Image (cartoon, rainbow, N blue to C red; front, side):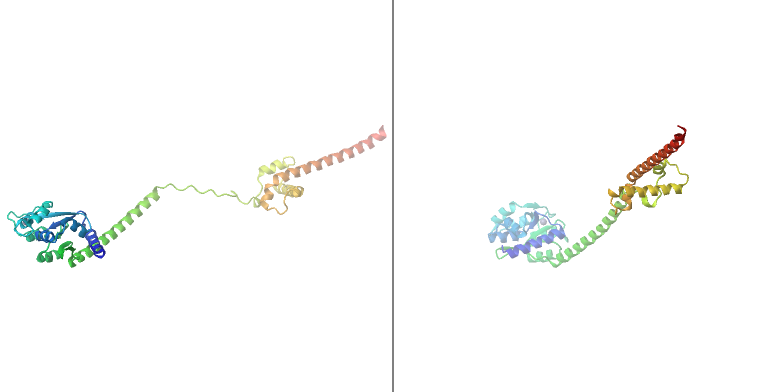
Length: 301
Ligand SMILES: [Zn+2]
């Protein structure tokens, strides 16, 4: 078969599959005149049908068709041999009628069982074209031909496609609504998220706030001062002295935060400074007292 024809037949069968639900193996109602014609052209009926329909097939013959084949003809024996392997399709005719008429009745107004029909008779083919979704095959010059999709078939296919699309759109909308509901339900069930820990200073800027009384009391425990203003003054002093003392170690351009951190050290140093001052004072006091006692005792001794 020519590749162009193969492509066209493939596309046609895809159309029947998509719009009318045809599936492999395709059920083919075979008429007596078709078998006789194929046999006369030395065509292998089943294989050539499969090649034409681009898939596996399941051939059927009605009882009326079998009666037609058995009638006297040139290729009777071969035709009977071929049809023997076909499945029998029951029809409601107790007294057999013409095979062509029988097939017409089996097909009805709609191709309910998704049959393909292999027939030579022009009248039946014309009738089948009016039924949407019937692949029609006939033998033409020793080749099997799959007819083009009939106008009725095309129209029905287009309508079905539109219907499908509409349905899918409706389904899509329903799906969207359901999903939205699900999402809301999940959100309602979800526990409130733990607050993210923010790194950095927890409280306000330490430089802009009074020093805690604890630190102050440790500093000023030796020198209790009555007023808070005095305390703060003392603090400032110690801070400044601390900075002065630690100027060799600490960076002068350090920011306030750093300064506040280095305060305890500086305070300690400041305290040391205070101790030194005290010692000096004591010494000077002793000297003065010695002088005083000396002066006092000198004359007496
Ligand atoms: Zn019949």
